[in-house]
Image (cartoon, rainbow, N blue to C red; front, side, top):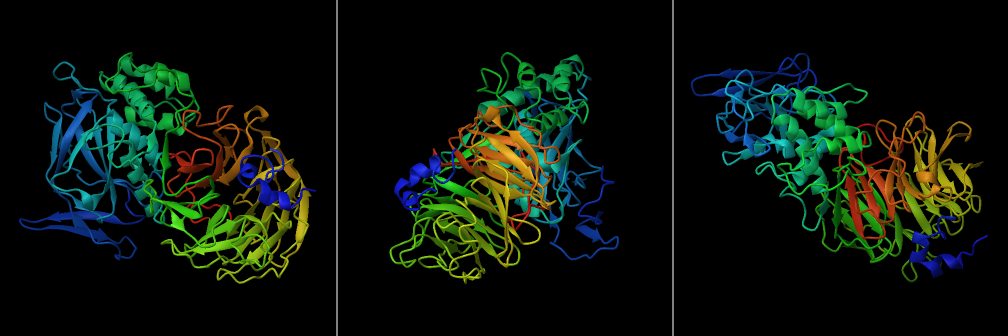
Length: 636
């Protein structure tokens, strides 16, 4: 058995290697059943939200402002295009969007210019809106048009549109919208979210602004945080692929695009649907999509060779990141990261802006690995070492922070058997479970930091080298331990199941099945919740991945951070089959020893790069998850 003393002696080397890890329109509905009627008089524009059996309560409607812009195919003006201003729906993903201009949609002139005079009503100031351009003449003979031309620009809050708003709708803004809004978009430019996920939808629109500047029609967006690294050449390349079809009559020139964008959902018939198909199936027809780009496209720079996949990543730095470990997402979509060095907690906004340039310092933070967020949006961090005297000379503590970064726990909580804690998980009951590597036990705390599990913790010595914890729907805690997993009840009863070589990460799906990132075997293992029997063992990246962090998305798909492979694996939750390419997604991204993994309510996948002190966000890649994560993942 490994000596406990060696845990402290090896410090950071253990995070990288194996001391901790044993080896290593209009007819549509808006806002559910609500409908919108417009009544215009000589001096007043009225918006009536008509009940249809629902309450009239809600945010007040807002009179729209004049906005204008251009539609261009590549750099060519598109004349005669129909301009629609949509309000995103609130009756489910990809449903309920309403054209606020109908039946008086705008039309572009000979220079591609359009002007929306303000004769529309925003359902609320924070309703997410977007522009869609359909058809028009992209430089063809007079009288001709391209029926396959559909372009889009994500705008964001309807109330933020002003008379100074000018929009460039082109292939770049279309590609950016497709990536950021993929979890919320269906065919024919329908964008919507559930009524309970307005935050996730708004955050997705903010990410679209990171990807592209809708006022200039260029990538990256002006909102991208300073120093952030985005795959701009990849976005421009996809925009050029779209441009080959946009700048045509919609016939033969569009055939290559529609062919490579054909998926199990069928073949697209317009450029926006083609873009959506490509980004929603990023591992399919990768080289063929690249081959559909013109030799010299209108948007530069572009890729010189086919990418490994069509995922889109943004990598953020700063915020005090210093060998980041686990990551967690709060109610608003902010991303929190624990840091092994530096004694700080890092926090980033949903669009990657740091809450503090140097992180939130904490008296109790010392060699931190795990992080979780409770139902009050407070942040819990595990500290492998404890500040002098904080734990009666038994190493380790657990820190608690408010959502604003105030330390609530002083030098940290040490009761309930806390000893070299590595991971933490919370649920809706206020339970805080800790994985104690040092004495192979589990700690259970209340959300005020008081101990439930007694002085020595639960299952003392029955959880060998425990490294991760996840909670099921029955409020049981599942721990990754050396050689398997263990289930511990809130009363302290423990059952061990053999399954794996060296588990490093663990997650529980909505059905209760348990998923383990087997670091040592480079595999993902699925176990039945009823009896712990192994259902599937799936080798990742040819056995050379070292999966570490693991999470399940809102559709039940499983995602793993490949520490050695510097990639991201996706598995089908029903079959456990690998969906991502053989070596994983993200080989084009600057991944460097990815450790922690979390999924937000916008469907973005976040990874901590422990070898580079950065966070990487894969935009719109997964199915959204309600945050914070309190037990098994559910759709928001």
